[in-house]
Image (cartoon, rainbow, N blue to C red; front, side, top):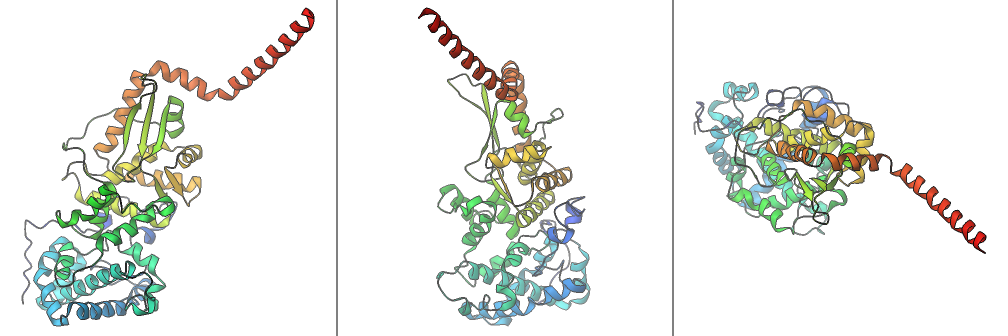
Length: 438
């Protein structure tokens, strides 16, 4: 079967190099090197890292035998021959190629791949591996021995589970969703939703499972109705929640500068959002005895470590690929940028830790440096502007109350000490007066 090489105008380029989609993201951040953010550590998915060099090539080649084992298991469960699966993937390979654009590694397949069969074989191996990895991570019988699983029984897999889980959410390490669709037509029961729920636990302190939340379940099932471009795109959609704005226009605001400590001084309470979605950022007035003097800024709580920092940056890279083609985009980028504005000192990080918004495995300085490094490279969307429009309105409407609250907040220890001294003096005065009367 021949595969056409002309680019369809209707096919969107959804998998790009991070360097091309997010300028500056490949600089060395304070918390990690380039490989920790972009390149896979254990398994290469798609064409971009297929031909790594040096130690990286040796490390990634170890997983190729596991891919063959996953393909054999897929053939067994689906009752299909390898040749039949190859023809199935070959039928969608041309569209899959266009999703990568004109990258040099894709062009390599064009120049050395008669009929597109090598490219299709790569998609087949990677697709079967990912689907089998989901099955192995979310088995129907969790008590079944690992030795019985064709993938987990392999040493190169069960010793690198964390690295594999990290790699499958890298922006450069994706294959188009249409490949998954073609394979899942032949094998039902792949626990995609449960797998995404399991991956999302990495962002949550205490591993609180939200799978019973009706809203979360709606997000899990969304791919049945609105097809994602790839696995990372589906994971991103699940983590940001539903869109709330329709306009693509970007509002103009004056320069913004508000730290977590400054918000506390203004009477704005920082709270951890209940939905745990990065897109659900809100700034509202709190009704206190109907006066509305206080404000409340709600942000999704997040666990920050090397894994989640890597995923945040890769989701931001995916948002940069989408650009402004969708209303209410840049949700993760906006979240990172909001937190970056809130932290200028280690005391600000401690304030966010105390409010349950950031649970970081990094030091206060390392956490501060991560957000300050990432934010300048990111675009922001309406969620970002909505939050700080609310902060500006609160400042303008409650300026007198803010001045009073700031004075009380900064001097509450001194005021408490003075009141204590006054209390002591008042007690002494009453005692002396009582003695004189006696």
